[in-house]
Picture 1 (cartoon, rainbow, N blue to C red):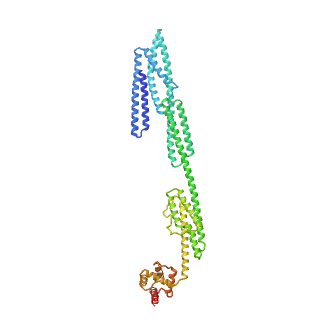
Picture 2 (cartoon, rainbow, N blue to C red):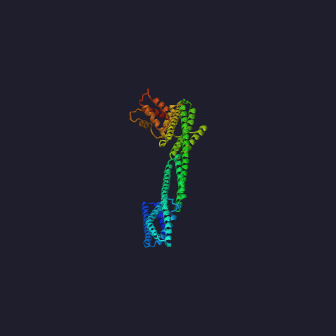
Length: 508
């Protein structure tokens, strides 16, 4: 029938509107969203216009039947309309669901209420006409009276059902809006929680609030499903599933984040303990060096050499270089890698200390000069290590100077000027220079005089194999009353004359 076709088109129009709203929610750009919204509004307005015209035409046809005196046809048409409308208004017809669907049901019910209101005048007119006809005792009049009573009863029932459906729809809309609000609020909250989890853990009270919100969503969703319109069942179940899935995702991430933070805290605690052990080790080494500095240095060459060997075990420059690299690596690599370098260095010290075979290597610049520690504890570690390095390096220098002084004293005990002079003349000859030219180069002001300091400094700087003790003795041999008088010429003549005498003796 025409009424059935209209209902089918109504269902088709509703599906098209739902599809448009779904596309509108998935649209990426504001332009697409606005365009889809305009299309859905245009479709809804067009359908409302057509439905209104169809209802208006149906109403006019019913009035035409009534005013033309065809009371029976008018009564049957109204009764048929009420008969078809009554099941749709029944109390057991589900009206709950998503917000958009409930809103559509409310809009459709408003249209029905307008149609119901328009038919109220027809009912009153028909009721008067039938009352006038029933004054006669004809069989048709009696039948019309029965039909009118049935129509009035159905009319009252439909009016009550319409009011009841209006109340149920309003409650369903309130419930749908509440469900939509808590669902989207919950999902937005989860999004905020995810941002928080990037920088920390989820507080216990926050997790409890999320759990309570999820339970409320599930409870309200199940309540809606208990009286849900068939077209909204899938949507409501989908929202319940989405919220549960998102909550489980965030909960899993929160647990993983908590585990990572706990692992990091454990690693930081281990690092702190390791740094403290290193600081204790450095303090112990520094204390040991300070105690050794208080001891008198031996005047024996062998004992002094042993001290240098022992000290080199603790301050070998190649190991300082390794430590330097290890701290630089620390600024680029993990803490565990740096600590491995420290531990290897300590093990090396222990092994070398037992062997006692380490040899001092050339000194290197102060380590860690370009290192910029990022934490206070690392700054303390670097500072104490530098202090230890300076102490060790200073002791090594003092031990080497002491040993060198002992060697010079031992060599000077057997000093012979003739041997020294011979070596010096040979060295001059090797340079293919004359002795007077050498001493003139020392006498820069050309006054024929060379001071002790000028003489000793120049010879030592010339790389001639001698030392300050020997040079002091040589200078004293040619000095007069400790005054620098004519040392240059006197020394050169003395050396030359003795060399000439030696040659003449060899000639004879």
